[in-house]
Length: 139
Image (tube, rainbow, N blue to C red; front, side, top):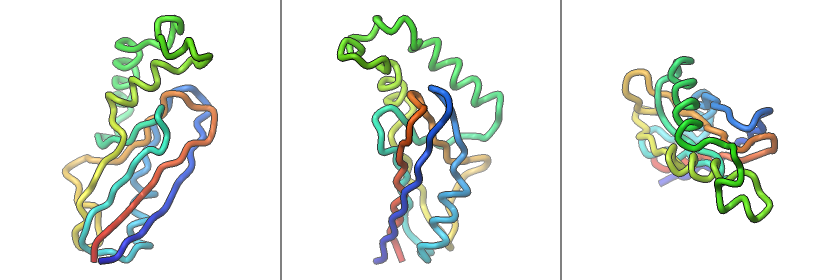
């Protein structure tokens, strides 16, 4: 069995953002030479997320609106975590809801997606560099 590892770094200009990273992951898969196996993609920061869904701008806005209504950033004193001097308690919880990672089957050298599926990096406390890991295993 072969293994391939690659990291990406993202630095969103705003506190929250959603980036389609499907092409980057597909590029890593091509470099790996793996034709059959599994591809893990995970956010390596506790205030960012990786998830799979449709790349439709209305839906991306719906996710953001839903998360902000459910877990608003302000008032920041609403979150006990923020008593540590941070202001990102909401970002930690948003990450838990949206997920840390995804695993995608690799078939015939391609990500084996369903219709409309794309991989996204979700940022909930941006404005600094954060890493995403891609780990591919197989033959």
